Length: 169
Image (cartoon, rainbow, N blue to C red):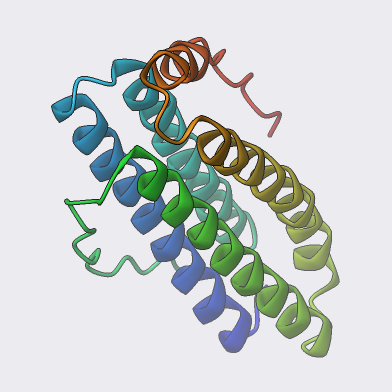
C-alpha cells in the first residue's frame, strides 16, 4: 500500500505528466500553424510519450491498491516567439519535471516506500534522456539561427522521429 503522502505526490505527478502532454500538444499546434510540420510531428509524439508516463504512474497507484485522483489540467501557453523558443521552453520544462521526479523519489525514500522507489528509478533514467534530447535540439536551433535552409532541414530531421517502442509493464 502507498502512504497517504506518497499517494498524493504520485497523483500530483500524474497531473504534471498530463499537463506535459497538453503542453507539448499546444507546442505542436503552434509549429503546425507556422507550417513546420516536422517540428509539430516531433512534439505530437512527445505529447503521446508524456501521456504514457502519466499512465505508468496511474498503473503504479492502482497496482499498490491506491486511489487515483485526477485534477484539472492548467491551460498551456499557445504563442511563442519562434520555433527556437518553443524548444527552449520545452527544455526548461523538462528540467522542471526532473526536479519534480527527484523530489518524488526523495519523498518515497523518506516514507520507506521501496517498491515505489524502484518504479521511480525508470522515471529518473527517462528524465536524463529527455533533458539530453531537449538540450541537443535547442543547441541545433541555436546553430541554425537565421538560416532558412538549415531551419527547414532541422524541421525535416525532427519530423523523422521514430515512434517510441511501447514500454513493458
